[in-house]
Image (cartoon, rainbow, N blue to C red; front, side):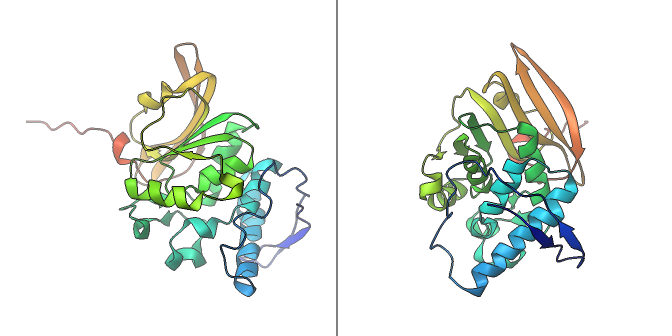
Length: 255
């Protein structure tokens, strides 16, 4: 797969991109036959290319494998049908129509930079926590990771299992209970008001975990890494994401 010259559709300015030469294995023709053929599919392909050129590249996502994976996976298939036309905007997308009850898919730029931070390598074990409908799982599988997906929502797990039942993602396991690990990499699709110590414990030695820390309109992407029984953490970039109910800080009430 390669990207030659693209056009930033939002600005109308010419954008010269670098060729993507190593989309990691197994994507092929992803979800072939799941979308209507013709102009609609071509339009989504153009929007996907625009997302790569005008959102990801301009937001410091430079890893060719991540760019290639996100260019290959049809994001529109992982959002409700009524929202497919906005699947590629630089905003989170609501998953309520899938039974997500307030849950959202991460904005493309946040997802791309978090994946780049993990530096996913083929064969690494990858936990996609709060997987939603499985978009991040599909991209991680495109990068060659051995992916386990989990979400506390039964409805979203069912949707993810159905959407990931393709040859390209056949090895992705959608778990009905939180897996025991250990995992080389953990990706949390949402923000945490408190540190998710129960997920830190699932990291293998040297393992890495990314999340968005904070709530509301202020948040910070964080990278945590395990060394023995210690866990280091550092800020990567500012961003926002929907707060995950299970990691909200318990408020203390004064009497």
